[in-house]
Image (cartoon, rainbow, N blue to C red; front, side, top):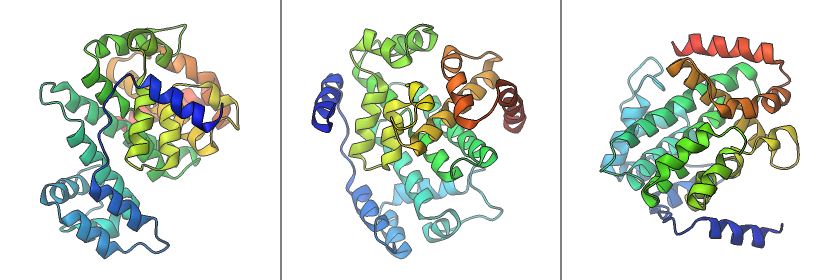
Length: 281
């Protein structure tokens, strides 16, 4: 399939889902970050123009997930300690929460909390497996399910479709969604990531993160995307085990290819899972 026909097919699958436009501040930040030598002072100035955004950023930077032993007092300090790209990711996350907010559904708060937990666990898995930079794994964990809030807003029966997809044993998660909705959250999230100028590995990984064949077949997607998908599905499985003591069909579908990807036996992965559950506790 060539690029044009693939884009046409993906647009058809969107089924009228409204993709919010990328805020101007992200365009400006992305332009600065793409320079050979990004100017941290300019990045801090852009973020500080939005009082609410800079306030949320500082709240996140001083949270247990990012605190480095001393309280950060300014956006400039946050950039120095966390780095330009990590701060950019936190800015994107906050702006997305605002853009995708649904004041009628308090359960979306749990969605964002879950995404943040998956991101933290993905970063720790990346450290232990030494397969990709932890900050990159964090970014993908944070954004991989971006399409879910949008299909929730667009389709009244999205929750039922997602529940059915999670319980499906024979079909893939996204195939089950398509049976119920005519589209799936991976496609929607892909277009949102593209429109919001997220890194290519994020949009590519989002599109394929329930297609576990790519884990076992090099060349279908980038190696970075394959590793990130494998880390993320492992992180989600660990969190489900920790929450309810039971797994889910997604891990059963992904486990053989994930073990192959990381060169680990099922026993070694089980040991890693237990270690990570202790880490979470």
